[in-house]
Image (cartoon, rainbow, N blue to C red; front, side):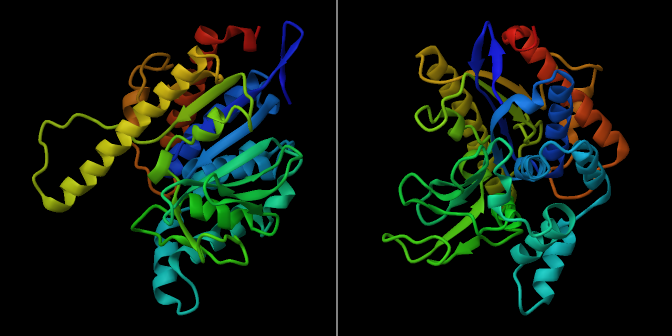
Amino acid sequence: MSVKINGEDKRLGLALSGGGFRAAAYHLGVFKKLDELKLLDKIDLLSCVSGGSIAGAFLCANWGKDDTLDRLETYLRTKSIAVSSVLGGLLSPFSSRLDELAKTYDRDLFGKKKLSTLKKGPRIYLNATNLATGNMFFFVAGGNGATELGEHELGQADGSKIRISAAVAASSAFPPVFPPLRLEEGDFPSDQVDYVTLTDGGVYDNLGVNPLMRVKRNNLDYALVSDGGKPFANSPDPTESGSIVLKEAINILMEQVRGLQFERLSLGHKAGQGPKPLWFSIDSAEGELHPGDAHFASLIGTNLTRLSSIEMDVLMRHAGALCQARIEKYAPELIA
């Protein structure tokens, strides 16, 4: 799946950020542009968080099928799952809100497929946050490699029996709307903990760039970072409300992590210890196709509610334009 440049094979990674259905639609625009540039089927690795996991997992679960991108677009235009998942979990004595979320993913996207069915596509990481250790916890499959789950501190275990829907639900279980996914010893054996609880991957890293920087495990030459998350915006009326202050404090912390992650990518590449990074954020006007696309796209909500035709069109158009602009400016050799 590599890209051949000057007779040499170069490996391409793609990070898909969190940000609900907005991010998923933004990433869909990237998929469509990469397909147009004949790069989509050259991707070696995807690293996904939250809304990015929805898009990335669906792409890999339907790898090589002609209608994959059209089906994902239809899903994002027609489905709303957040409200039904919350209410279903509240009313049912037999399942949690997260169980209900996973069921909707099974019904509409994955059909109860397991991670082991992703072997033929690129290597894919579905990233969550481990509340037992504070580390990023990954479900990884594809690329004709081992199907695993785990993290660097507690180690890895076989993940072939885990459903795709469960991994995506864990990755997109943003608190406090959804409770964490609990993995018992039978699913993730460890001599350090009795069980682990996993929440939204965005709590640790909303960009999902960590696997792109694991040089020994994933030796990449280029790292595209599709950032459809919610960038922090200046406010003329800063809040004084206690609950809103907490929310804004979390947003500030996430913005700090966002900046530091790109700096890590940049410094790693300069030191010859990482891939060349190409980052395109939803709030960027540099490269936008129509004036105002960046502003409009950034104002769209980041929940799991279906998107209007105008929202879908702007998100996909904007993401595709930014992706192409970054490649043409910083890595033109990819499309030469």
